[in-house]
Image (cartoon, rainbow, N blue to C red):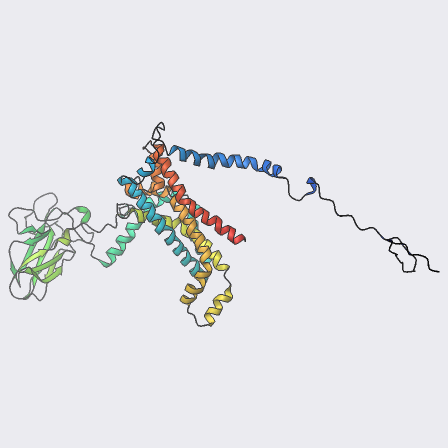
Length: 462
């Protein structure tokens, strides 16, 4: 007879066949206490962040809020004027020039610096001494804007003997163009053999082929007298079909001498262009030698007036007026390019190093030229880096102050909004309401670029 089964008790059989008690199921894990959690509690994190938050609020948040409030009041800060300070930014000649120059800076400077940095980064990939080149280009970043402004203030000096830019321009100009001139020189006046006419000098009498002419000049400044000038000589004998003559400085040191004739101690005037003119038409030309003499060959029959064109008496080329009203803003942008080109080059070079070489080689294997590889492969792959450089430079130029203040020297034609803000608040304007309005406007202009950068960084993290 079978023993009845114990209901509800499952039998457990061991390997030897004996019954065994079943092991109890493991208990669920207990929740970790607060101290055992990996992340600290919020109050503890806030405690460590509190000093930084207080400092951030004191240095950033408070000035922003106070500037917004101050921009709504007048210069003394007593009367509420609303948006009057904001509308005043776009009124007045100086303010409008500052707004215009700021727009030029935002459009031109970041674009030019990014392009130059891209060219430097691409070209230095193919040279052995690229590290040295990058070091030299990046070196201006180690110089403060104040020192850079002082340097370029000297570079843009008008005098070619002091300003490097004009010294180079004058050297190039004098290599390809005539550089001998005598500003202020002219005839003595009165009953003389020559007279002034249309900025030049012409002879009173007419001359025919085979004759010689004397053209005396006075009022020649010693600094314009060439070093290779020799004592004035008598005109060379004119052969048939020729006109000869002498152009000289008709002044004898110490007095004496016969007027209107070359005397001992008087200097010839080399490099002067001489023309034979009949009925307003130039028939022959010549250039005076070191002793002031000239000879015109193959002169047709007839009588002619000897003329020294006005170009002989214009001021010598002294370069460009870099710090004038027209070129001052491009000149300052050029100094900004000198400082920031290295920054753009280094960032873009890092982006180039991260480009997969397989993509470039595949394009070359498919028959693409180097220009096509650069335009259709390199540039698209570098687009994120180029955008970072462009946006960073845009934020920077909206705040540019040092270079404009030092190089511009207070010239209103060079002013930008950042400089105008300082002038209105602390530089003599004594109107912190207007200055605060410009500061808030700059903050509003910079904010979109900053938000764009934050958004891009978040997208890259994702």
